[in-house]
Image (cartoon, rainbow, N blue to C red; front, side, top):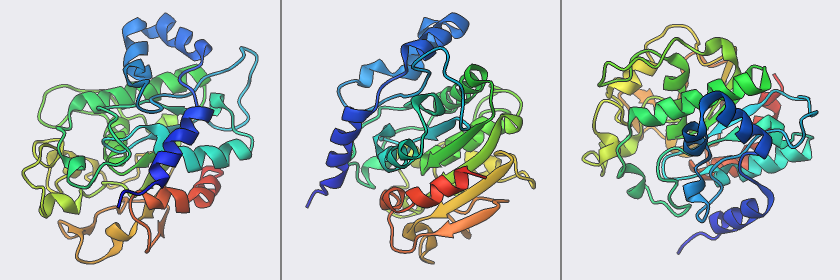
Amino acid sequence: MVKLWPLLLLITVQLVASRFTSHFRRFIVKHHGEEVAKRLERDDLRVSAVASTGGREEYEQTLKHRPIIFVHDLHYTLHYFEPYFRRLRGNGFRSFEMYGTTYGDGNSPFTTPEKSTDVEITCDFVKQIRQFIEIVNEYTKSKVDIVAHSLGSLLARMAVLGGKCPGSDYDIGKPLTDKVHNYISVAGVNYGASTCSWFSSDHPSCKGPISMRCDSEAVKKVNAPEKRYEGDNSFALLSWTDVIPIRRCCGHTCGKLKNANETLKYTFRTREGIIKASNNEVYQLLLH
């Protein structure tokens, strides 16, 4: 039976969220060009879901909270973060303080585990997320917080770490550690995804240098540093699929975040359900 809550979430977020404000979009066009604005705003996904958000409504607005960047999972858009958006808005956060873009195809809220592995993960995803972090930092003149879900955590960590993209000679730049205060991984693909060892090892997102396999170049790269680089603080939220012993990633708990300040476990929550269950804890972590 198809779960209805993702559909209700999608309908809700389309009523209350928006794309970039005109002020933010003009800033991107002025400093980075129209093509960059299009690539980040993803207006091509207008029919399917919320593809981007963030920016001042008025020029005079000033920050009351650190800006937060949300990085979604493969095949999703920002609609899955609606429980977080709702909690933050209820505590005084405005569009000027919540940001997101969509990488990939931004497919469906009804994606199955099998479907989630059928897209090749490329360096373009990493470059898009990194550029967005840099632009939000530049626009707000503030360090940012990052909340990254599932594959979004692997990609965001690569974006912050910098260096060469696995499988290529392309260097995306130096670490962005000094631009990030809090980094929160929510059911993150930090040591890989156990599904790549089960039924989907031949699927595109389980193959190649940037993949969810626990032994991929990308996974090894983000876990190589001995010191925290994701930001001043880092936190991990683990779902039940991260915790049960049968689901391991090359001997590690798949969602474990190396050098994290704190790890929270949600034993009876799936990778998707954890977002509904953790909005209070994520809000509290963002106050660090």
